[in-house]
Image 1 (cartoon, rainbow, N blue to C red):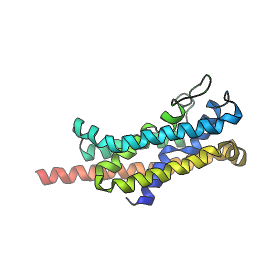
Image 2: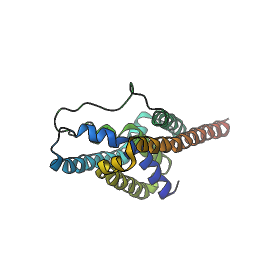
Image 3: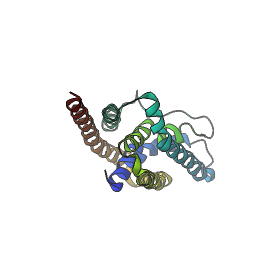
Length: 200
């Protein structure tokens, strides 16, 4: 995986376009003059969590003795479920949470930005090629910066694209994620089969 494809994958799983309505709903009780500060603060917290997990996730995998094929297959499965939810959203399974007052860490930083899909993707990148950690850090930073731009311009984009436009963009991103998830699943199965044949 190249730096550009890793950054794009992380951007897709963070799903900033899909998070715009959630951010706006969570900030409706916050003073409009303070909303930009709150968004920036939560994005910085999310970035700190993502960077921390990027470097600590590998130790968690080693501690749990999770193999690379299992992680790749599991990550593909998780991404597939997330992608299906993006393509076919369900009100009953929505990530939206009602927030009283000013949100702090939950739910804007976690799980809207630093969610399970982003953390699982980081694990996959680091587990497959840990020596390329500077590239993965750059990819994460680029994806996060793109998310910052989208979310800070959230209200403007919502007016520009409209609710239907945002839904269309999110479903398009979901379709891309579906293909990536299937590719990850097939890669994990192929790797497992090769290891099985090499061990027999």
